Image 1 (cartoon, rainbow, N blue to C red):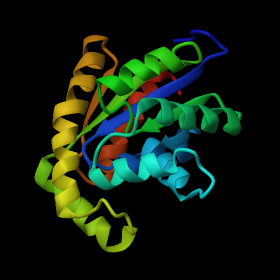
Image 2 (cartoon, one colour):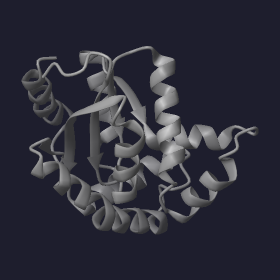
Image 3 (cartoon, rainbow, N blue to C red):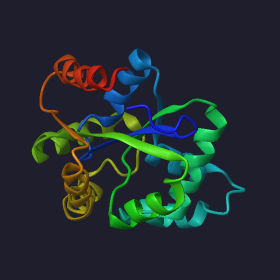
Image 4 (cartoon, one colour):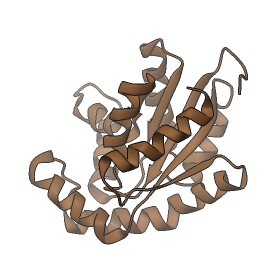
Length: 197
């Protein structure tokens, strides 16, 4: 899977809220050297910047559990890639809907190539419990039951069709996320071995 040496290699990491995307991305980063970019973290960081032109808009979307316009997210992702001076990236929690996908294809196709989509499939009740547990210590304003219900509904309506889109291209590696951390990572490792990482 050589491809264009000038293009960034990207692996999208998708799954419901609490499926373990961030945790597994940290492990992948350590073991395989991919740079972990979380669309959500980039947006949350941007929202903290008092001089950001996107601050108000991001704030509104995060509070409402809705999806931030793709131009903003792609701009932040591309800036982070350029700043890192690396070649291989995990993008966690993106693309979340058709608009994200279209925007990515429009803005990023010339600079990045999707190697794989890792889909952490996890039962809804497990995801909810994990997020509520995380909410006790994470300080995240969206780890509460009301926001979670909206986020899970958005995930089923908007993100699942993206996973299906990539499945048709044989790019999806589906992983059972309802296992121990080590069992999940053992399955993740196989994906990277197939890629020759």
